[in-house]
Length: 97
Image (cartoon, rainbow, N blue to C red):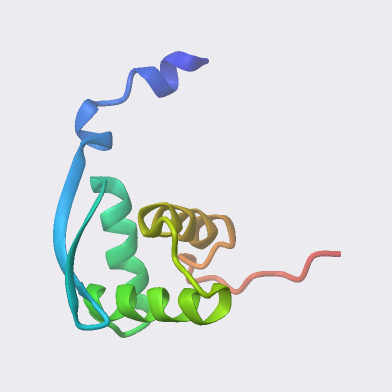
């Protein structure tokens, strides 16, 4: 079973560093390329640029938690939430129950 995971093309999990502005401050974020594609999809679905989405996510997390200690991890987990919740599906979700 691990061969399914271990046999992936290394390009799927290669890092990609992007220079971005978060709330007006220049910084860089390093994520696996696949996560960047999901973030692009989320931003597009929200009618935002990637930069605007990252800034809004950062600002809202800061407002809720008072700090953002690991923004890259927040981004990865946001991608997982997006996929787990089926937010990338065009079909309406059924209520559980």
